[in-house]
Image (tube, rainbow, N blue to C red; front, side, top):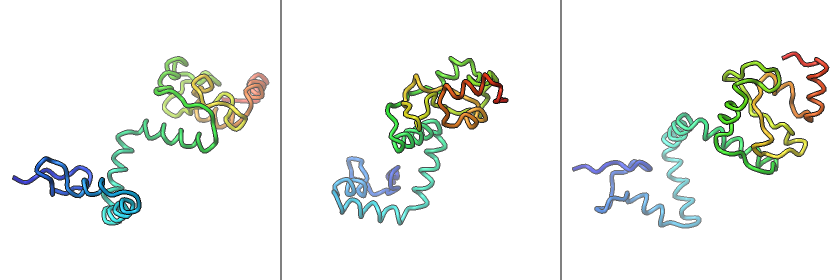
Length: 158
């Protein structure tokens, strides 16, 4: 009976107890030897690796988007971390409407920091809102007071 291929490396060479021999060998390696093994595997299986990454990104779109957002916020030095499911919670609490222009958000909306990170705002649940993409791009990194003045003086047409 042929053994089932390993889901990581694709090898059918397995120990009688079940684990894949090449993967067990790779786990036993440490430091530079492990990095060299991983580099060699990647060079040999670049297409396979790219396909796995592509499938993961397609299957886990929201998770990938959140990870990219967290990485960007960490790069900026933002303090705090947004809770899981913040977008759906905001969408529900805002009744699917843009805070800025009261139009429906639709599917093209942005998660906006009320006090921009560039001006020292935090990356917490109480400092974010959903805006239509157009509204968020017009707002940019304005201070909330300055943005309200723009809205009151009708210099903004949403």
